[in-house]
Each structure stands twice: as structure tokens, then as C-alpha cells.
Length: 276
Ligand code: URA
Image 1 (cartoon, rainbow, N blue to C red):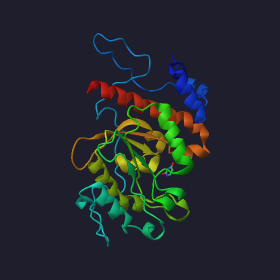
Image 2 (image 1 turned 60 degrees about the vertical axis):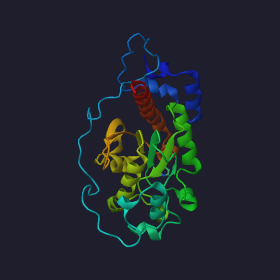
Image 3 (image 1 turned 135 degrees about the horizontal axis):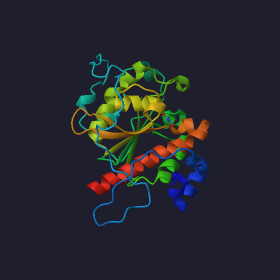
Image 4 (image 1 turned 45 degrees about the vertical axis):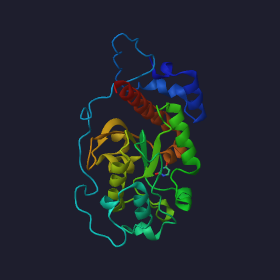
């Protein structure tokens, strides 16, 4: 059966709304292993998956951004590990001067959303122009597209979401974060993840994926999942990767790939919820 044949009418309508031509989906099958039905239950028609073991099929790791290398002390408030809660972390990020971006930002963008054990932590690359002006992530067209994509994918418990960026300040002109920018900001992201303890992480774009997973690789190698984030304390967190909405706004042909990635995450999250 093609992925297209698995879509319900509501999903088709959403896909049309976010600009995905569902005929493309017939070209490449969704690479999700089908779940076994629970004893005594009928198998589902939708592509529900069993969550593979966290170590299964992980891509080979080459650590970028000096992971594990102690960060040089920087002036100002600069002690991610000492932030006891999210509001302390937000305040520290707002005052951060760890990289040159602090002189270029209007406002730092620490993040927003469900601050206690969210179902999903969504990590983008860096604040857009409107995010920088208002201090909130995923504003404007990118935010609207992201919301439509999440709706289309029917992520279970999608209302329980926290949004942030790998690099929390925008550089002049929206310059892509350098490895040094990402390394400077990584301790904030890692502390944020440790405080939030999300069940799933969705990384949007190559820079966010590399920062969250701690691997090198281009986006096509990293897209989909499961990958994992290994926090400083606690269990590894499963990670899925897809395109960032700002890229999809300029290359709409990638929307079908993004939908497939999110469908994989939704199926894995459904299977995870059933297994609990
Ligand atoms: N910032 C990102 O990193 N990605 C987006 O899609 C929008 C803002």
C-alpha cells in the first residue's frame, strides 16, 4: 500500500493546506516498520510503528562543536549548569555574552511553551527577524507553517510542546550560525533539555540536528529518526529530524519529505504511548 493510500481525508486536507502535493508521496514509501498488533487487538490501518530500541540503527557519530570539551569561562551570567529552573535559564540567556551575537541581537530568544515535561521539544536553528524583535520563537510565516505541519502530522499530544532554538540569538542578516556560535550556545540548550525532560525532540534543520544529537552529517543523512540526545543526567531522549519551516517556505518540494519525517515521529510517539 502506498503512503498516500494510508492518508485519511482530514490529513489530505491539511496536506493540501500546507502545500504538499500528495501525489509525490506515492513515489517513495514511508520507511516506518509496521507495528505488531497487541494480543487480541486488530492491527491499525494507519502506519503505527514500534519504537525501535534507542540504540538501534543510529547513525555513526562524529562529534561536532567540541562536545565534551569544557567551555571557556565567559563574562556575565554564564553558568547554565547552575540554573535551577527554566525562568533562571531564560534570564541568564537574556543576559548571555558568550558569543559575538549578543551585540547583534535585539532580544535573545530562550524559548516558550509547556515548561514541565513537554511531549515534544522542537529545536530550530536560530531566531528569525520577527523572533529577534519579540523574543519569542517561530513567529510569522515560519511559525504558521510549523503549526500547520504539526497539525497535519497529527502528533499525539501536540498541544504539549516547547519551542526553542539551538542558537538563541540572531546575527545581523540572519547569518547561519558558525560551529563556534553553536558551541557557545550548546550548554544553554543542554541545560534546557535537562530541565524540560521532553519525551521527544524534533530538530529542525541541519544545525539544530547536529547540536541536539551531537553528530556531524548533512540534513539528508540525518532526516527522520530515531536518533537520540544523551542528556547530562537521565535517560536518552529519542530525536527526529526534518527540514526547518523557513527552508520549506523557499523549497516547497521538500514539504513532502517533511511530512514523511513528521508522520514517522507521530507513528513512533503513538506506539510509545501504547507501550506505556
Ligand atoms: N528559525 C529557524 O531556525 N527556522 C525557521 O524555520 C524559522 C526560524
